[in-house]
Image (cartoon, rainbow, N blue to C red; front, top):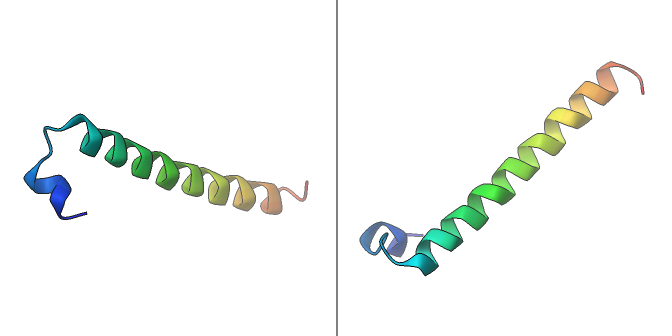
Length: 42
């Protein structure tokens, strides 16, 4: 993802970064939900 730093103004790079951040958020939310669910025995 080094090219994203050099050409951060292009919409393609911005879309890729948003997509990557969305995946990261989705994974973290799943992990948090799994921990909460397992701690509450649901």
